[in-house]
Length: 84
Image 1 (tube, one colour):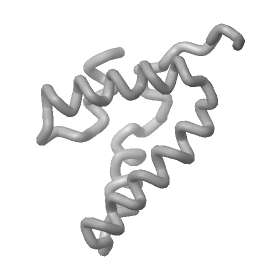
Image 2 (tube, rainbow, N blue to C red; image 1 turned 90 degrees about the vertical axis):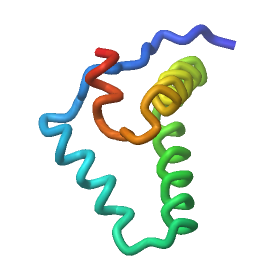
Image 3 (spheres, helix red, strand yellow; image 1 turned 90 degrees about the horizontal axis):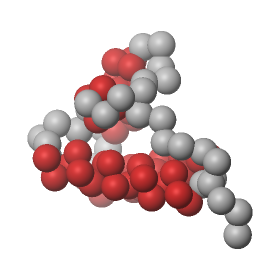
Image 4 (cartoon, rainbow, N blue to C red; image 1 turned 30 degrees about the vertical axis):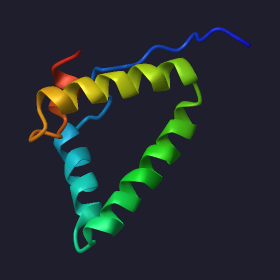
């Protein structure tokens, strides 16, 4: 087992964070709740694989859970802004 050398980046890496958020929202347009949940699951798995580091994934999950509990009605890019 190797130690993680990667850390979770909470600063926005997007030149236009709002455009990234709109892209994600648009991907859900026209989908049923079930299809939308399936899209979210697939996207999370693709991005988790892209990260490829279990420690960073754990940190990202913990951050997302804290944010979801604190702001259940605000699932947006403020997750990154609040923790940068």
